Length: 435
Image 1 (spheres, rainbow, N blue to C red):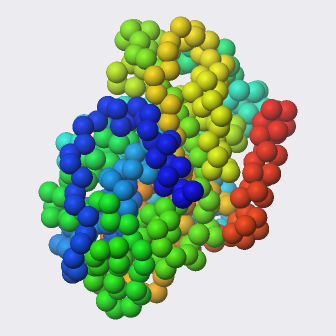
Image 2: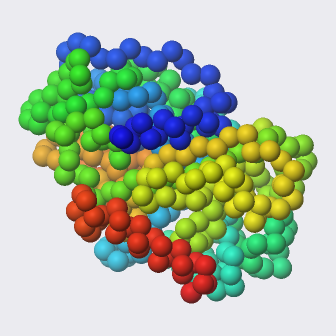
């Protein structure tokens, strides 16, 4: 069964889909067209690239295999976060000044997200505030050291939350320390993605939905093929992530080795009284624990609890998804036991071995953006800006991130997934044993 078929089942009961009104899908590409740039994928990264390029005067065609925001961009936890999934990967490969430049790009990514929301009047329930929270005293000490490290190394301020104050921030007995970041936040990701698509169309970008790319002829010009059409273009931006090669062997199979699809799962409760919802998390922030196999949660604009976690590294959806996720939620908020779970859904995000983003080129005129590793809500927007800069001829920043070295997942196409599952079991055991 293809990944897109598995995903359709995970998408079926999405709270996000239930709370938007989609326009009729754009017709698929059925003719040969010409564009300056062809973008593959109508998620955050692809649409951001399209907007940036269109603003610079380029003609842009976007090909989407399903519908806008169908993949991770329309199904994630909605947390827009400064930083990367692993700062160690960046600090271990760059001298201090370049590591600072890369890290501060993530701050720019958050600023860019807020700017786009304002500029294009995107109604996506953006709410500032994000907390990292620890469930053991050892992890709380590590979190406190991390806050100090960000201040010392990057001049970035967060507020440490000591154990006695945690109940003032989250109405839960589970956490013994935290850190609050007022510059990060959360939003309704599908509303944001549809808003980006509307902005792109208003700038003249042509978006073709239900137009899976089957192969890419590399050259100058490049030719991007769908089942019934093709785009001849000077540049290609590949922003399909784990879906890029789902529909054809001749797209960019060499990119597969650096990323893996990881399933993440989310539930939403029925709406609460607004005062009750507000009492759960101070300032209506998003929150995420610091376990390797983590939980994340946040209130929604309509006063539900949205709770995510329960990752799968085998692409197999957990049994009894709603019930198992509800059990995880009640371990954090037992006071929500009277609430019904109305939605349970999931999707696949792309991770790299070192949890750092993977940007680069295939030849001189084909660019790729992948490996956001759970930090894609904000970072994809910057990725689109960087690739646009590179196409224009100002490639220094794109190439800086492109210098991050990546290791292929071990085991090749047959064994890398079982190897990853085994490794994640090890880290989950460390979380359970608090080592």
